[in-house]
Image 1 (spheres, rainbow, N blue to C red):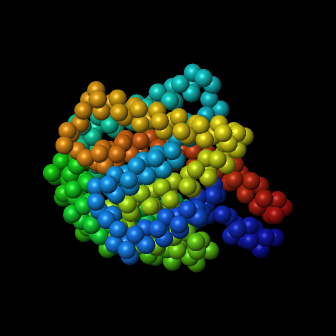
Image 2: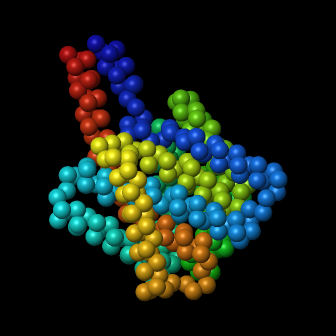
Image 3: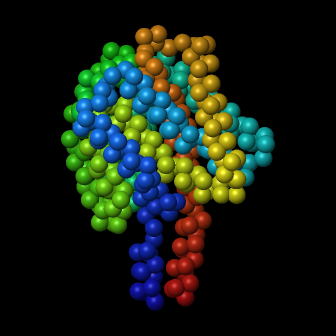
Length: 318
């Protein structure tokens, strides 16, 4: 009986909602294409290439958070007034983050980087140690900064002000530790059986060092990070038709872009900020509510799995 309990406890999945071990085949194709582009010395640092990478980053990455409200409505069984309140609160947080990028741009940048590191670390649910997860999330930012300090510093300055160059220097100083801890995480994931994920993340970190910052981040964000959220949302919203699911993602993403454009017209930020810097500011605005909601949803979705596991253990004990 005790042996049965131990075997059931040992079989508890590390990623109960299916995140952390999924790698979409498109990642390998995108990584191979970028690798070939580097070999043939394609001008990936030219303005046109950076603009294309920015479009891919927004167009391919923004939709993965477009189902937050639909998932919230499903998880909490909200009626229309409560749903309207949730949508209003979500939009208010986005607007506040956008205004923070204007009123206190350096604070907004630091908050965005911290939230991003934490959120990207959530992809490593097969790791039990929180420090390993956070380091793995921070390694995405650290690898790009270590490989292209000038380019990343310029991007930070474009998102904030001249003081942001210090932030890049701090990241460079912490990068070796973050990457070393992440290598431990990769090894742990490999030993846990998540070998495809471990290999993909190791390759992505190498490419983040080698590729121009926007291209490298687009590879990770669009082809490695976002697909897991999309697979999870599709599974949670499986009773929604595929057409409706796709339309929902497209409409919410479009509404976010329109809202951002209107906000920029009404309360213009830095006039000298590049289009790419503005795109990252958009991501910064939606990152905080997306993180808060995704954490709540994750705990909500884990609860039924945890209950079933406890029941199974109780039955085995009996």
